[in-house]
Length: 418
Ligand SMILES: [Zn+2]
Image 1: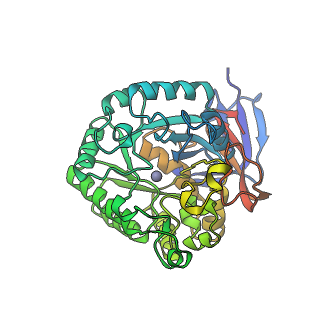
Image 2: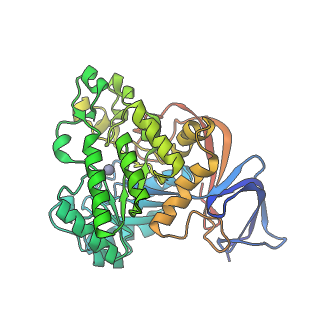
Image 3: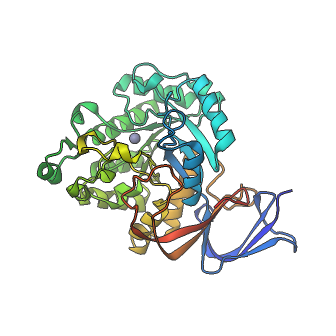
């Protein structure tokens, strides 16, 4: 039988129950409980925050196919270190997760090596080629929670419309990487003053805005649901805000890097600032933060995208897009959003835990009695240098940097995993 734990004196933050106060939390048999017996293990969490385990809707684990960059084992170890107890794996593996056979293979790897709960997403189209829909019904039966062609965007409005209607029939969430391809063909970074100064190909915000608007219109037209991945532009935030006002079933995520960094970071051509979509202007960052504070942007997702040093250590044009993010997400967001006074800690916890769980329709992101005892202990005053990682890659702009506020322990089903 799983042990009983009594966590005492923590500041307990649980947006699902509108709770933010110092109180005891009990765990029994792997779930949160109303009380425990006198023989329970006591953990004194004085000075720490206790929150539901984080849920990341957007993680690249690279397995199968690119295990020199990451694996399910190493990626989920990094997730646990960052306080994530549930993550959604992206389907752009090799082979792509677009068929029963590939999902079965991935499910086997997950059940053998994952250190946190891993939910699988599958492709919208076969091979992410944007031509033919994947077999959603079969994929759903194998436990797939969402579909996305992440890394690519379905360009055909007709195919996207069919995907949204078809997915809705099976209760699958459609998540879109919003990118209009003709506008980004030579794009290396955000199109603006800095791309002109640095002589790098521009990637205009319009490429995202057009697809965000298209998807909002299709969701309105078909009455189905859409989740927009890694939103980066101010106009996109505005479009999503007005879509929500109209009652369109739309949700959106932003990454820690888009919420905190601008295109100016690229001035030294450091490829660890090269992402897709690209880092944008200060105005875009401000709009994203405002959107996150008022709930227009529902969720923070990392888009953890590991790449090896040899991949990233190339001429800017040839280096791949993306950075790792699982281990640093909380520290980076806490500093820029909570310590700065832009939003309360409860909103950050909600965006990293309660909201993504609700959008995915899973019973996580809560400390409610009977829920899996997935939780984190956080030291808001910790200071540390981020110079070791459990990920197989260290392509992070924060590597070697001093950070504050840290997840100090992660529990999964009542077991301490970090
Ligand atoms: Zn993407």
